[in-house]
Image (cartoon, rainbow, N blue to C red; front, side):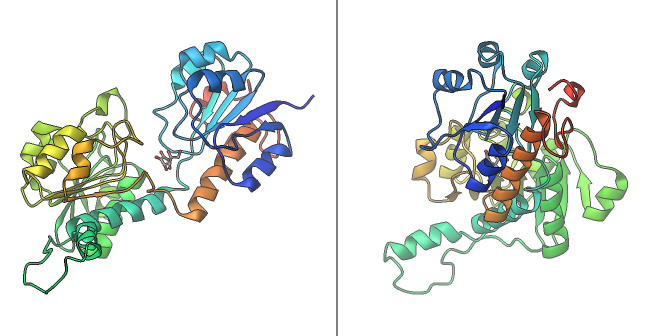
Length: 331
Ligand code: 8YV
């Protein structure tokens, strides 16, 4: 009998077709995020599930879905999945690293530049019909080239941003990360490790790229914003919750820092109302990885993982990007 899997969000038809070569597939054609009881109900009898960053896979769900053997996500961040709980239930988990690194770094850089050069704010001004004359300091922002870039979180995406800054824009690159990079990698990126306070104090443009966890909750709040230059910008492409959005909105309103670019929010898709009222912030709806080729590659990688995790396809038993590979062979 063919095994059953669930695709918990709508995804490219080609990805679903690949799953259908091996499994009976239930899809989410309305693409609504199912409430937890509904997700649990639909997972009954399913051996695997294709998820995105919007599904919560936790202990109660796992306890209620005893047939589940694989949870394969098309996101690189997996704070929505309790991996240790999955492991203890014998459920293989995979994420989607690497395929989105460069696309996400492009977007982080674009958001940082839009923030520094006040692109959204000036566009809104133009659309409102308020542009009646040129003036010398109209929407004058700060330079990106030659400035000091601060990267908070130096994983794959952080490194790709550092490379863009150093090689493309002649930026001085500082970074803070729990673990330091090898000296050779630091030299290649032209990046220097500093403690978090020094990073906040010395950078002109802070880009946040740390994964969300209890340890990174509100990593940047009032105290950290107080250390930054009043001319500095902050860009968050990591996860909502890494930045205290209320504190950031206050810092933007009082011009404690110059501007911010945000692609992720606490409680998204809700956005802190105070952020919607300050002009010096560029807001985007969690789209840093959203180029068509990259979203296809992310979906394909999740499908590869799901097929292999459930013992089918050419890589049967060897899902390429498993997060709890100790379970391999038990799927
Ligand atoms: C995704 C992301 O768009 O990969 C991640 O961790 O945050 C984004 O690339 C989203 O989570 C897809 O589910």
